[in-house]
Image (spheres, rainbow, N blue to C red):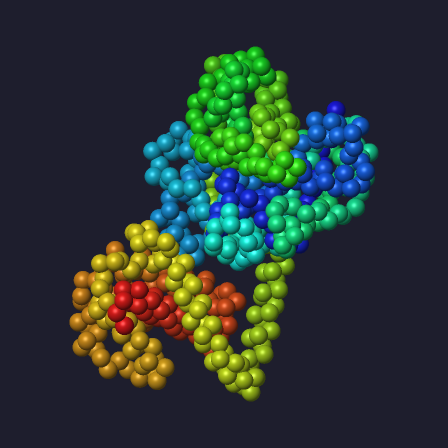
Length: 547
């Protein structure tokens, strides 16, 4: 007999959990979750210190305790890796975000009617949870820290500066601890209070300190675990099909011990007495990770089926209720190899809505309320003219910070490559002179707007706006609007894409701070668009080497 416990980890310091199987000289990436092997090592280390793990009990713990991966837990919701059979059309997705819509449609590639769908892009979120009206995405907050090595060994590279990527501090993760009933007393001692653990690497350099606590009493049934975590299944009524989702990386082998990229048909046959056929699969592969501190060596690399992979099996005959109940046992224990390290967590016939929500849930459920409260207090404070004038002076000293913010936004919108799918496009075909022409128009608009004067350069403006590069979205565009459309918006025309983008950006803390001195939100939005375009044109002109 086995028990389950749901545990919650809060990282008090950044977490550096190695990923991609190798260390880099200059930068090392991190995993975005807490692997079962990492949690298992920390628990055993604490058991040793408590005197509960010794020569008499070590085999019981090593063979009788499984640690599942711990995934993000945000605003009372548990997030799982996004399944690879759910796709979005990136063009419709970006258009929906630009228009300020709340959700975008998802395509389920398992459905026959959607086989011809053009939606083939993976959602941008690594983790998802089911909300009442759709799927909510989540990106784990990460950060880079710069370090230097003081080692004088001649064996090392001469460069001694490097960066660690790490999970930012203050985030919550939840995972599952499964153990045999004979270990109940020791586990109760271990989880009887909130304990401090150190997870991941570089524990002596400001990484890894975390709190761990048990969220539930011992649970005897995995169904209770699913209910507590909010994992929902939905049997679609097709009696001869079953959909299996990998909730963690998996190491599968066939009956001959050879690595395979799916759960063995023989394994399912032993559960049901009926032989299945692998009908569809949506998978990605990865590599096992891990470092053994006792051996001072990394584990051998093996190819895995990555978390989020989806397998659809079809049986020649319909499954009875009893046989389907047998298949549900796939969820009750980890399948495949290295299950003690969290590999092999499976979900059967999981439920996923048809829509993906566009807003990301905050790490702190009180953030939204506190933000509204702070915004209200600032707005109320600025009603007093002397305070408002003082605040103007303070903001005037933050001009450099505002320019840095605009540059960051520009680089985020432009991305790493110049292609037709970016929110901001400044093609390499544009020369410095053409960039300068557009920049001068925006600069003149800003100057005249500040002086509240009419445009006195109508002749030159008209000439530039008729040029081909001002009317070609493949050469220059912001949110799919070419330069002429942007100019028309600045001079009074309505443009919902630009308005929605500006409104969403100015609702942020920095946006509302830098553009507070506008009674009219539409005026603030136009000024922001002008500043962003002007900044982008200037940066690109400098990159092309002509000032």
